[in-house]
Length: 287
Image 1 (spheres, helix red, strand yellow):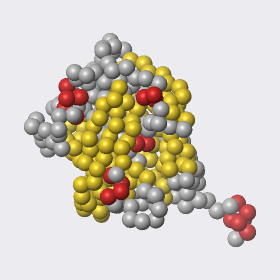
Image 2 (cartoon, rainbow, N blue to C red):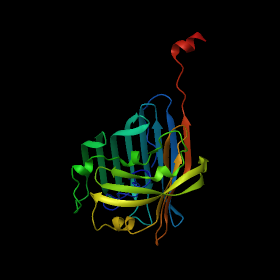
Image 3 (spheres, rainbow, N blue to C red):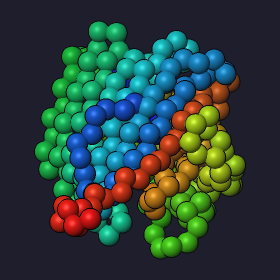
């Protein structure tokens, strides 16, 4: 769910770009009083499990880190197949996440893909993208396509301003400008409904369901099967649940309708914890 930790470098650039992002990597420490989300997801097609993924998000007063990994195989290989991992680090400024670096690696059969990207002010400043896959004709990525973007992981962490209800229609009233180092696309969200969700472990409560429209911009192959799949008028829903202790929402469920069998990525564990800042040494010694 979060970006593209799964998928052939030829055919599956977006399967996790929709959702988030997904499995835990070790994270460097961020600011004190961190809030941490541990989320585990199952990937199913026609109710048959084909994979799993995990996400670990750590948000502090001044910095954040988000990491994801996963693997899938079997049915609908052109949507999700292979294995991979990604990681983003950045700053927290006025309650908003500002990404600074993004790293992605994927593997599918004999294919390998690696991306390293540095971001400043929403613009790509440095980019290295390596692959052993023969290059095919793609829509060129321009300098303009690398400006005003979010990486796949940061894009899936939705900030809610103010002090109002976290689970609200406003969460869906936005377009996410995503660049994964190779492909630039928009996810246009719109409000559908409020649902009640329940993970096997962790969160149970209200969640906001957004309709998703996928708009490819650059870096894609115009005739790819996945592109046709995502732009073919399918009903795509992305459900967000609140991360306790923050003003952020994270993906709980992704559902894509298909005649071949609905693709569903859903959280089985969605647990948020907040670490209390350590007491100052002097205060501790005086007790």
